[in-house]
Length: 259
Image (tube, rainbow, N blue to C red; front, side):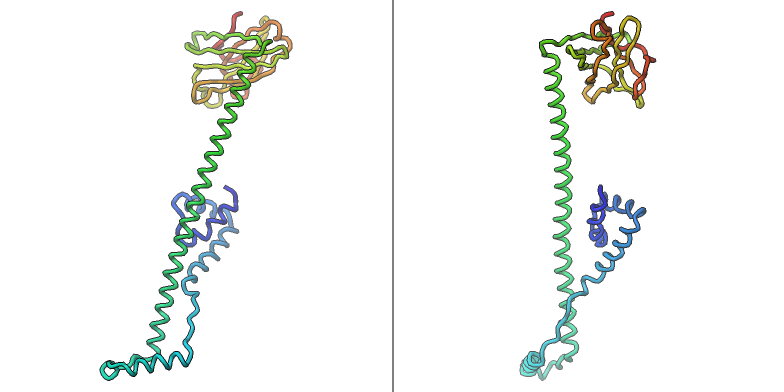
């Protein structure tokens, strides 16, 4: 959330109309932002005085005279004492203040409803945009995999599991330039701080490849550039290492191609 978002919430907070989540977020921000605290103080002053901002106008002398004349001609004028002029205008003034307050509250309720609806719509749009972006990335990745594995000059090698990773399997495809893509399935999610790493073994020398992790569906993907030495003859293997990768294998081999 950017600073402008907090600024937008200040007048709503001054009216005690923020929902619980936004109120909690703003309260945390106010603890560290003196600028917003000062602005909130001004909004609270404005909020406290808004209902009393209606200017009451005294009627003209002609209008007052007509009203008093009408009252004096009433049939009940000789029974009910004439209400003092001050009380009449005081009552009218009180009614004006009450009416202004009701109109103000109704207006603020409408504004708050629209504001909250707008924020909710913005959140939903942000979620949809994220989902669309993720879907587009997955589609682009799948198309790249299809091109890699179906290219006329593609070399494909299957990696078989060891007893340390029963049920897991992987396939690597690489072209004549050494561009390689590996897909793996059936490996458990790596613990925190750990990841799976691809290795190119030439003779007895392991050469490090990139690290990768499994997604929520249990699939792993890594795109790498093979070392020149591994282009003609190499054994491929997968181990579990630190998340940043290792220069030499430290974990046991989980999957490997034919030696």
